[in-house]
Image (tube, rainbow, N blue to C red; front, side, top):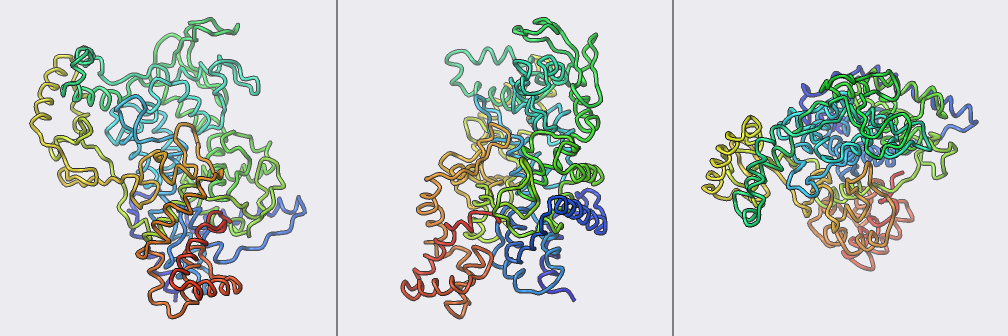
Length: 633
């Protein structure tokens, strides 16, 4: 009979995701065999380097590591006790099933995707929003959309920015006016090709020439909006002088920025002109050139006519015609996510398997990613089930330059999101029981929702983009202004009923997971102080320490919401404790996810004896500010 922990946790996980939304799963036998093959590759490396096989980490370290790596937070006191206090040889496998099938997994993956794709709530210099795009990415992470399909939809997208069927256009409209920067980020994120220098000149450190870059840019050239020309005359009239203070202008801004400005037309012309400052002999300034891919299987566009399907051809080339480059890149990113360091570094630069320190393993992981159908959850599950993941911490630098020596996990500071989500867990209990942020598609005019319960941005966008003449736009606009003027302001930010739909939003002060908060984090927020990305560059986060972080731990959220907050969740487990010793043990398990050592218990008992109840608050403060709490082993 399975222990209560196994039944409870595995059973609880089954109801969190609709089984119909999950991609086809490989058999448990396949998963275990794949994990074993990875361990065999690692063992081969040990033999070649005459390295001793590391010890397996203890249960407490494994528990904390598995939670933080998989779902980005420490376990609750209840989860930790449930795991630590049973003896069962299968409990580690059961724990992996539990975390990977929890809401926390998609939350943690969402943070990763937002950093990678630089997703923000709003846009600089525009009233347009990334709200529907943000929601599309979050949904893709929740549904475990295969990585190749996710990439294909992003790169080939076109259409209405508010429809969830085409909201992936936010990938391009987020960078509207900067298509070359967008393209260089695309190549870096998905293929590990650093081509940003080639926007201006031949890359002196690589093989990419400026002509190559512009041939690639031809695939995405010609991005426009859907039907915005029909509103141009009306818009030009309303941006004159006093009219910009009118309600008509504010309503027009909704259509101009938030509907037309968030749409994407033009499927990729396949042709582009070389820039006026082009300086090489292989082309002339202003010369029209056709699209051609720079590596992998060559894909060409016509130099005779505009084909308007360049983005689809680019996506197909990236996924299927760059040999091992596409699967290797995402496999190495997932390896770093789970193991703490890429098989080779940096993970945003592609290195062919044969040129790495571990050619057989890199090749195997690339093939495994393809065989799994780019199922990132299953790929991570395999890595988490390896013995390699369970090795004890290695405080020494890697013996392999620019890569992982697999000899135990390297110690690293938690990300800002991991620290925040762990503090929220201590303050309020399991944060994954909170409602997740939903798509806010209310119509806002002057910062206030209007037509609440009558029409959404999704509906408004569909109607506006269906207009196909200036006359139709003017007629529709006049009616919309009248409807807005006749409507009363909608509900506040927390929630609003629109038919049968409830909108859920959180402000920066909410005690919820980082993935639910405003993006990027405000500069006065804990997340920003601890290095959260401003989402302006790919993977722009930092783990570097600063004095402000120390002051924040001493005087900010930790003191206010944990140390001095008697209702904080971590104190709940103390209520039925029968002794000071048991209370101290439970605090250690709640915060560090392990019982205290004998000497630690002696120190803490002395503190409680001298300080009384204040001693417990001092223990909480000391443990949360300790390196053991802030670092992942």
